[in-house]
Picture 1: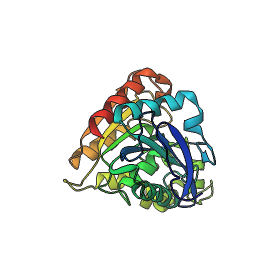
Picture 2: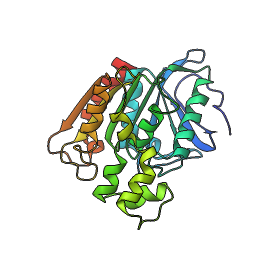
Picture 3: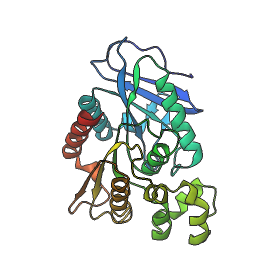
Picture 4: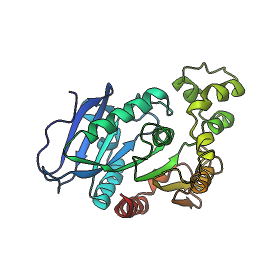
Length: 266
């Protein structure tokens, strides 16, 4: 099915294709046909998926609870794309994400002028490559959790080098220096650090564990916040003491933050 299906009043989850990838749109209980609502596009992490009639963030209750909090706070719908699976922000994923944004914008049910993005893990790379690419100047608010923003660091730190290289068609044995050079055009961090002051940027919230050894705050969350701020972006950075790579497991504290953030900035 291509394009967003016909919607009815109330809560519904519909699946459709955009850019050749399965996508979903989830509306709240208060949704009414004829009213264009804001939308937050969620970006899944490693091994995440959107398939025909199923998605990991819709079908896993602990994850869906975060999306409900966003809907409640932002008075919005939630959307997502499979975006080529374990993409690490590659060009095909960016194109698929842009196709979803275009499909949402073409729908009379969606106010694309009030678009937010959220996600974590490798989904962070897709968020920033979209914000710096086809969605430049089109996103009002972004929330990221333990999210990748620095592919150079991913390669040098070795934790996720093989799957990152695989997403860019590079063999596992590729040297660090060659891999960094090949992937650099798709690495968000160097471009974020070169942003000019006054570049239109979304209000950004970053939630990260201070003891995250998988995606360290020192090489991702902190320089991301610094780069966005240097360009004049508004950033809320919160590092949780004693939390490792499991911000998603915090439950209510993160739900409350997401609800308040999108309620204030979408």
